[in-house]
Length: 262
Image 1 (cartoon, rainbow, N blue to C red):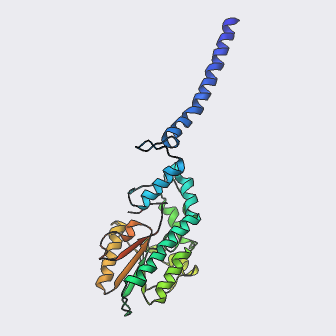
Image 2: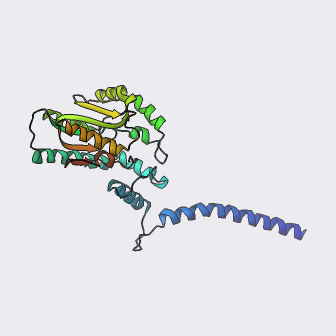
Image 3: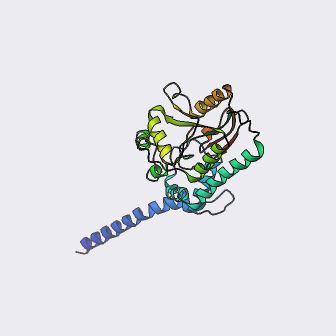
């Protein structure tokens, strides 16, 4: 009797210990990974510190080629892109564009002054798509299906800047990494949310889909320059929109910690 009772007691103790261990291991791993992190100088950091530092280094182009937002930061990044701070950061960018345009650009007003815009997360927001897809690798098919519906909202600060550029007689050229089969949906989406009056809309076709986005956009800018356009500035949300041969063009980057396009 005593032996059997002792076995039962030991069994219960083992089960309880196992349950407790299973509960503690995830907490210990998570605690070690993020919540108990310290800098090299021994400064203890919070999850918010970690995710804000990650976001900032994405914007500074110190973190490159990431495929997904770190899982522990998806909630933080989602809150950021829906926050007042994101709008303030973005609007400040377009305000600096206007300062530069007003103080440093000697416009000829001969139909050859030009400004280049990216589209996604520059003129149109993809936040409605990514709010449920952060932390996942980009599913191009799903993204293009969403784009084909033409429901992306305008970014208000970019729309105001777009209209200001247009009012000054500057030619507006849109260069996007979107593929050619999305042209009709893209035009409809832009027009429906208030964008109209651009000079050119350049999308990727099979002849340039094999090169990087950075190289593709650089080649387009070079071509436009060869046609006599004076490109005064570029506004985009990815470094690939403003990298490469800019020919002294001033480039402005909007914040976007949701994804990376090379």
